Image (cartoon, rainbow, N blue to C red; front, top):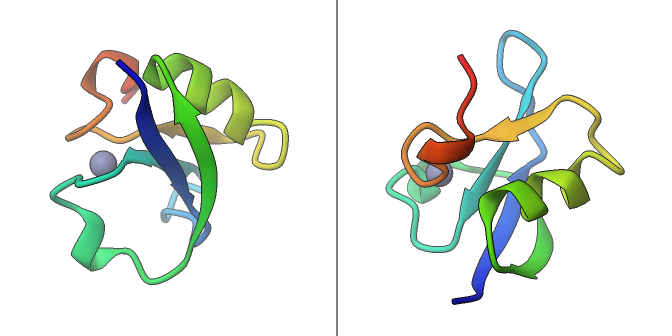
Amino acid sequence: MLLYYYVNTTPKIDGRYEVHAIGCVQTPLIKTSSPLGEFASCQEAINAAQLNYPKATGCYYCCKECYTS
Ligand SMILES: [Zn+2]
């Protein structure tokens, strides 16, 4: 199943950019974002995000299998 992903373009305190799937519970907190498009997995979305944001990482809530602490 394809999901639509986007990256939060405001970095976290540690400098990482979080990748989110559409409908994530964090969405209301995200002020600036850049669309990534539709992907079959969060890992593919993160790979795409890392082209522009090398420190992109998966969101704890919506990309749990890709989340790295
Ligand atoms: Zn998320």
